[in-house]
Length: 208
Image 1 (spheres, helix red, strand yellow):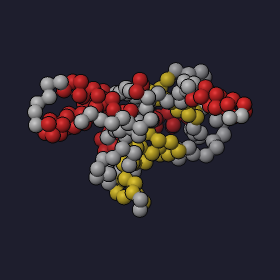
Image 2 (spheres, helix red, strand yellow):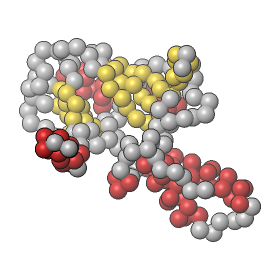
Image 3 (cartoon, helix red, strand yellow):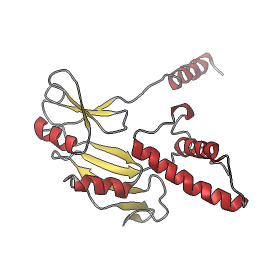
Image 4 (cartoon, helix red, strand yellow):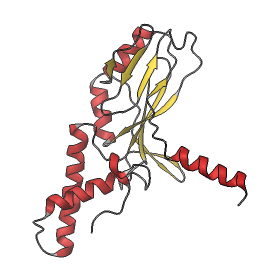
């Protein structure tokens, strides 16, 4: 291995070990007050910021959106981003009841999108679309089990009580199937639940 190649490998290793978290995404809007009202209707938190900047954060999210004359004096075109939910149908119903226009739920297939939720409720497959008044598009995507390597084990967490409740229900269903397979009651169910819920978020193999 040449010295240059060794140096590149070392630099790559250092970069990969650097703790980096996506903090905020800047979007363009034409009317700050109207955009603020829209995102507040979604239930997003209005954060304290310097004058000229509006920052809102979705419940349970570590990343926020920002807009305002101090950031984007001239709109440069709509943005497209993903919103992750644990139950696409419940999320859509909640937003619609709050007066937000949300497209019908669909799921992606090799032959294109198909109406309705994915019959197998596979993660990353079921989606619904909503747009803010400026055309910025948010694609809601149902994810309950992350692909391997997408979430670090030490970062496993739940952003809201509803996310935790949903994970507990899925763990209970899976544990019921576990007891059916073994043919006996599992008194150590708390540890089994915990291992299942962590594996679901991190993409690791679930307990048998």
